[in-house]
Image (spheres, rainbow, N blue to C red):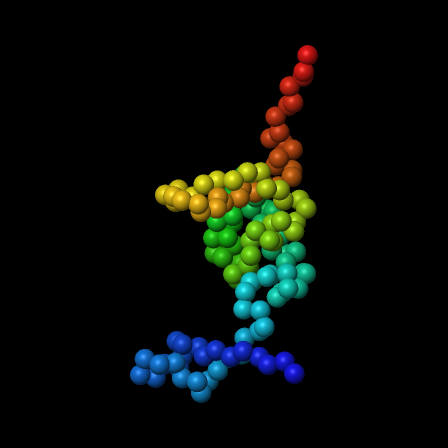
Length: 129
């Protein structure tokens, strides 16, 4: 038998600074954000198309894409942007960018572009003589 997790909406039912257990809200088994699993393939494809259009102007890093998606598309809130981009064959990782002001071993952000943009901006390979 499958047991479902429940949480209380804190903003609606707070009593004396404590969350009331009287009005639990069920949440799914995946509290994370895998957009492909949660919303199905059609929702993920729609988000990929939106991101492709956004990247057609110029390359952008993962953080820029996530902020833009959260601002413009309610379905994509909380999505794993890197996994979504990696699963699209027409979007390629073209490099990494260090976060400004970050020191230490923080991983760099990936920079993404569409294949069409990359083909258009490719440098000609030098002839070896």
